[in-house]
Length: 114
Length: 115
Image 1 (cartoon, rainbow over the protein chains, first blue to last red):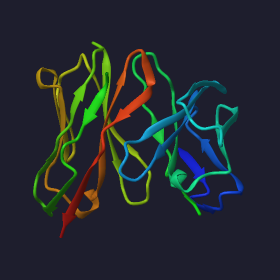
Image 2: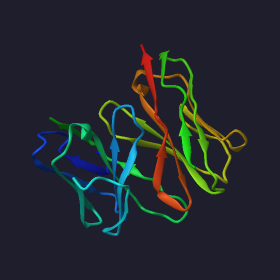
Image 3: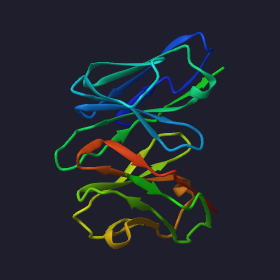
Image 4: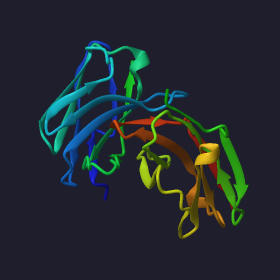
């Protein structure tokens, strides 16, 4: 069983829908992340949270809205998405050690916008 | 600017063959970290290894080995006696000491191992 779990694993939504992706980490880590993986593009960092505080927003459109209520849970709220937002959304966590930071990923949520 | 290049888009081998996946990186930092991740069809990115820039020792873990050469800015990954279960997309990634939250990924190499 992975230390980072994501739900749902698959989601199909219309452009006018509002949905959320959920992530939970069971590793006792301090930082959580959202990454996006589109076809034929490198993985892109979207958001970073350290101790529940957002420390990075990598120029992500406002139709993606993250929420981090505590160090173990992370959400990505989705509204009025476009078909080009269809991708694999990967949640991750890390212990943020000073001597190098290893990031551990979940299984991802496959999103299709129709 | 940081960059990771995986020039091999796809590699196909027959089971029990050895295969090497290439990774070349660019960074101006003197302290940085290199990673390899495996992504099976299920989607999860599985962490395989992290190497610090000041540790050039090669590493072996079972059938996996990694060759880190700062002189050529390369961090290559070799699978010995490949198995069908090794079929996946493999990503090389880089992070720098000043921003260890940000992983810069290569475009990945799809490895197919046929029985």
